[in-house]
Length: 542
Image (cartoon, rainbow, N blue to C red; front, top):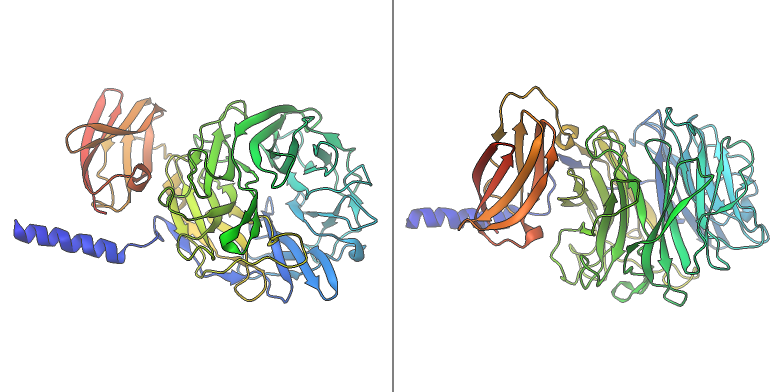
């Protein structure tokens, strides 16, 4: 007995001394690199991919020079799948002197690059440029907004690149007008070489709107999400609203206060009073899996369940085109109320149904600093694994002269086949530059593999013992109601992981004991599928 106890103690010590933030589980995180090294501040980055050539990616950012003062839009491109990048810190579309940054990006069905930006006085408004040579040269400006006297938030862009959609090739833009009731506005074009259609007002609420994001669905639907904010500083975000169009943006169904939230708009005192927000980001599952069509919205929240007393990343999902929404799902898997801060999430769903969210996080450093984490779910947001993807930390600082606490307001991520391309701003070189890290994953691990199965089988979890995550997998030869539950060593039911109908196939999920605050010990997992039932033992060592 003493020998066995010593062996167990040695194993526990081994786990605690060798286990770190996960770098496995099918993910391979490459080295960090700067997308386009320069002496210009690069902030607020967005990235998109060519619809038919996955080797071509296009990113843009606010680019800022102080002597003399100049703001433009960076053009950063790869044509070889991210191996090398080229570009410029200035979009060369005329008239360069009146560019005002805040870019949005898209690539349409023909491979034409599209960039939106703000205009500088006296040319107020939102303008677009296009490039037919992968960003080397850009067209003259084309005005998107109809009103020339108002100020605007950044526009976000999306192109319908689905050949089966009746709006195939249409490009959409949405933004907030910074006057009156701060409404969400919208326009589209079927030909980027020609004029945009007249501006439409999407909502008519008396409460201010902020930060719209846009996505195109699997059947050409358009989805827009945005925050409702208070009318006085710090303009707290109180809800996410959702707008839906199934006729190419000609008419809209709007859900005011679709998701009550408590955002983090304001400053982070511990991080030199940098300006932050909880503005929503949206993604649609376009995979050929059971989760196809699911809409995901991610925000940063505080002091509203499931967020704790420090900022957390919270996800919501809808399986009925936004008519109803799930309860909030806490994405970051560090301990609740641990004094650590997560902010600026960005989301994309890969072609296998994996949900991928990046964000800034200080759990691996001091509270005045930050690193970048990826949280990934392969079961529709039920279970998550966190990965530290930045190989160094940095200390966020405001960029002087650009408003209180400005360091940029967003980062981004795009999934391309079995790779992820995150982009973020980091001032570890002395100025903000756009960083990335190539990430590859095993695509088969996130699919429901519908094989020819002849028998029911529940497999042993792996690894076992585990700390704190393990994989549970099984196969079933016929469609049936599935129930997967966790029991303690006394046989008490403590967690229900699955309680739903599932088709015949092979399944796998990640079980994270930390999410349920389980302590070290022996647990049992029991799967019931129709008339089949089986139980297996697993050991948690923490």
